[in-house]
Length: 636
Ligand code: NDP
Image 1 (cartoon, rainbow, N blue to C red):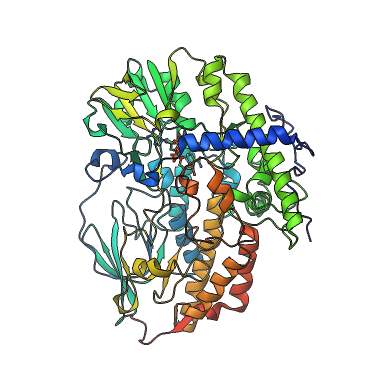
Image 2: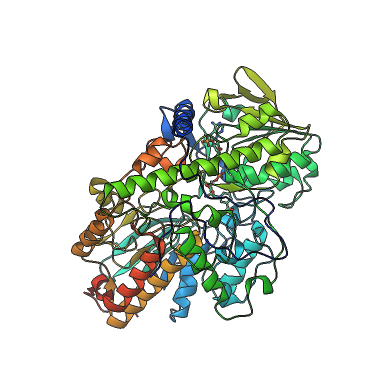
């Protein structure tokens, strides 16, 4: 039994004797913070939020496709290659070749499934790491816990935070090891999934005219896949060069993700966006461009990175199961559970007490009991710890950036984890360079116009040769409810219509009544974590177990409506009250651009560790709840 930590209690860490953390660790929060100071802080946060909320919310954005094909095209492949449309039958179709799809494929292979066909829009495996090759791209979670299947592949990452290319290569290595290339379809998008009652298989159609059957479908299409742009006037009139960070044009910039972008040496470059992507790309652009204009709307929190090379000995990789132990230790910490030691010991784990709202779980204990007074005391401690953390981050800016005005504009005024926390030791120093100008767009709610030759903010036009959008992704464009992928189950019912009326209905977020043998990976109605590959792996293990159980019983994977009802009741019963937190946060994709979190409880309320435990027990004891008798014999 573990004792829950309160937000201000850091876990015991295992220090790295070779490279000490370059900045002081977050200390305990003051036990009795000055109430006037806290009230002033709250007022400041409210003011900053009000300055930023826009009435058009998520409608302020536009897709990077639909008339903007060159922003969304795939610059990393010489395909698509000619091939004949497929009309065959496979055991499992996996939609998406990122880590979710690779993990599903690997775990199915381990269960002896022969024909696994991964269908992927990109020209190779890798997903996010296929598309995002912008300069400076790195994992922002420790590589040794983020990269999946390290025990299985024997690979030991070379950096604490791996560059994107190392991660992409690991995706390729893993797909090779589990023989996923043999049946894979690249540069191919699944356009519909239709349940064929007569054969009890799915008919999978694609944009390459394929129409093949699959006994099972695993949907692993990710969440942050479709690049988005500000929907502002003039964006299509820009006559200079332009692209989105997830489609980096090295043919124009020269260089590689490591830098060396000689094509920018005489260019005035503008970058819009200072989220996790912008924070990584900006220092590289600052180094290589003649002049860099950074168009910022909301500053990120940028904490200490401390990246370094690592050896197998550093992470104990000579011991069997080292990677599993490490990532479980990490998951426990970032899920608010107590541990004896912190193996990763970085700024994520040091700030673990402040992540509860981000991954939407209710901390075990720590004042979550029935007494409202306990909860109030817990929230007060949370607020104090949060204020201390944000003060520390604002002080970091002031310490590093020499121009006081620029430093003030770079300071974040909202609660920690309102936005994706970021980490860099190169970002703030970039603003001390003479060739870098920070343009604050908060007062105008972002850049206002793009002209033929530049960007206008507050009446000033900044002349540019190149305009880069680090403006993120359309959240949820790729899921089963997104509308992008029509899924027709029993009786031809469209899944998105079914769910539109009463919200999504699933068992564990993974399966749904009326949609047999369809397994959905992703954060919906299960558990999330900042280390999302870990969550995906647990889901992939579960998906493979469901397939194996259905095969053994000659049944379909399909929960009864009662099982879905029971699961929704579990989600609702102890749902964490994080609405107020997101409602008070500065806008972004975490809170539907300032409108709070939609659709009621979407996560298992006790966190990822407890959810994984629940799934494992359910597989042992209750897997038949998700099985439904076949009406037709299996096709051979
Ligand atoms: P984000 O959505 O986080 O950031 C988009 C940025 O564009 C924000 O700074 C936003 O400002 C700004 N923006 C949008 N519209 C305008 C406008 N009209 N004018 C000015 N600025 C504008 O996208 P990212 O690509 O940075 O990150 C997306 C996610 O990808 C991250 O949250 C993270 O989950 C993941 N990621 C992970 C990495 C990893 O290493 N694991 C690395 C990079 C990304 P505002 O904040 O005001 O809306």
